[in-house]
Length: 578
Image (tube, rainbow, N blue to C red):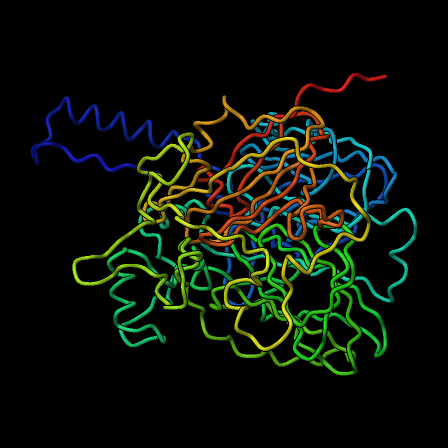
């Protein structure tokens, strides 16, 4: 970034002239990345090829990307956005040779995979990163099956196209029971450089929100509007970055690209839905075609038939559909309903499905402010909001435990957070069709019966106006010397308390945890690597810390993680090798 230096006096002295000239020469000598110098860059191929085998080479490089009238600088792997589908088989070994052709460090993290921590791919946590011009080899046995993905864990590269799908076929051949098997990788593209997006969010959190409530918009009463205003809260604060900046993509294709998934009537079609976006929760549906959920985060679950599901950033769901003849819209509507990714599931090539209109933007409630248990049916959360008596318990910072650092980075506390495992997702609690809830998920195989040996509580904290995000009030830069510690093989119940008004998809590397979504002794708790913690609410999981090493633990909203909502989980000691 250039800096303008103004002289103290309009009359520039000789000494000042020399100094300014030297500064200008120094500034002009600063290296700038090759892509910023202009010239031609290769246009990225939309979509991906399929790579498989025991040795796979990948190359990271600059590219341009264009769709629907938007175009800009991107980062591609082997010239593709998304990068290639890595298709492996449970039980094999794999060597992945990743060469970095960028002029900055890069990396690849294998999202959801169980592997030795030094190959997890998080610079500063599990390895040093891949320097420009270097090749790093990841090598590990493939211990699982299911749908996963991979992405950069360096800076904000993921936002620029550095991600791709990963599928591991089950060793028992069970994947062959479907007639077709498709990837549905959801993401976004922005022509705005991600660091500029970050700057704009720091300047004004609502910069990309064109759907703010007006004086006459929505069903909220005047009294409620005054109450929200007095609390300095925005009931439409749903997505930090949305359609004004984003084109929503399906397998790298924008809505204008007319992506098709072909089928023959009567076929069973498996859709491996991956939310590989940087910042967007999607509401996924195929109007008129029921979806049977068979996997969550790559793990088998009992069949659940639904008409819609909300998929948080970094989650995956596998669904099976048997569509009738015709062309059906495959709709990925952003949670704030500012835009959608769209494709056609069609029995006739070239027959484009008609996309449904965007639905009305939802509005946050007092439950999203952490006052769910205070709501006695009055619609206002039971708050005293009479004349001069406004009470703001969400500002009462005495409600958090002493290990939460309460400072400028914490502007809200959820006074009475509820467990909302049964909540289908913002805006989907009022629709008249079936929507997936975490309480619907039941692991297909019984988990080992083992009760937690201790409990732990972690607060998700932030100051939304200043765009500051953290765990327990501490940014990542302040916690690297004080990680979350687990003893190897101990069983811990972890409760996440969301003290903010935004939903956070929280991801733990290198492990699966079990969602506590049913009875106390539920041996079929679903195993996941990412959990959505609803606004002002809590979510609980049981973790058996059986993967030794250092692992990242973070919000998977890219700009939240970049701002500090990240920690390191350390599992020690390493078991003795026999």
